[in-house]
Length: 72
Image 1 (cartoon, rainbow, N blue to C red):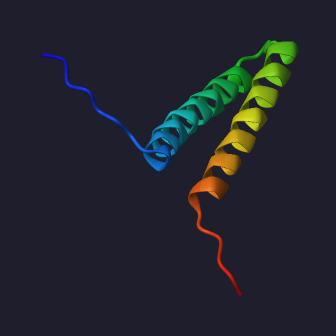
Image 2: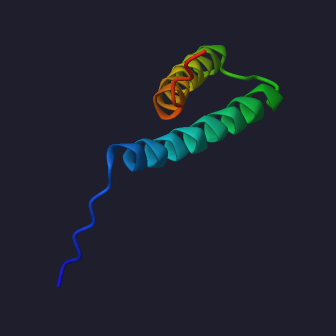
């Protein structure tokens, strides 16, 4: 018997947000480890930093969608 679980839009966004945050932390650790090496690959470092910034932008967009608008 297969259980069919439906998630609403907000739940899907929250799961995606957690995945993106985990990827962001992993990239941060990879960047830190790469900078600790004596002969670090600068091209790889730049690519990882760009990827990390792109994840940060995605995280911010999802957080904006999850935050209700406040009418002043």
